[in-house]
Image (cartoon, rainbow, N blue to C red; front, side):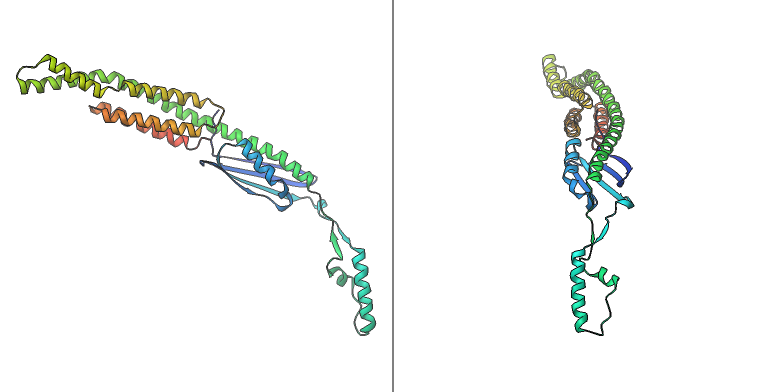
Length: 288
């Protein structure tokens, strides 16, 4: 099933260590462009996060944000560095012996001294593991949304494919009439010039015209390309680039039909084909 490159997913989880929230926004891009925002506490898993996106997404501009709010009980515990405190007190006592008028240092003075108070290092491993698990869930939601949107795009493209097939058949049916009309016009001109039409000469000219106006080969290639587009729409792999290439080939054949056109109806068929191709191309720009 094809996937759209435009989607959004958000997942949140609350646990004993705090609250985690992933948000992913994606838009179309020729390549996979990952823009990642993470809190410093969970920065250790950044490479794993990048590897995860590289493995699960084909292309698109991906804006990823992770928010982490630690639980109040998870805040680092403050403790006193007793060895440092003793050193500061000993130094303070030595100064007091020499500076009899100096006031005694207060507890707050001691607390302000660098190194006296320490914060126990917090273990963020549980939060990091939970963030990776939640990321899988968020990417699953993103891919489901991409597939839903992709299914709608496939329906729109299929409608244009059906429209293209109708135009191909119109062109096939029209060509005998075009050649017959050219035969009549040529016969009239030759009669005006020569007085009496040379049938052999007329047939030679008609054969040349028919060869110049023949579009069977172009119509066969158009049908083949349309069959390939329809086949690719059912693929499970990223197909956006291949579909874009097929649009170029379809447009080439439609242009050739237009260049060989000998009447307004055939020209109209060529124009209608190019309109349908452009409509498909616009949808394909969003396909992964």
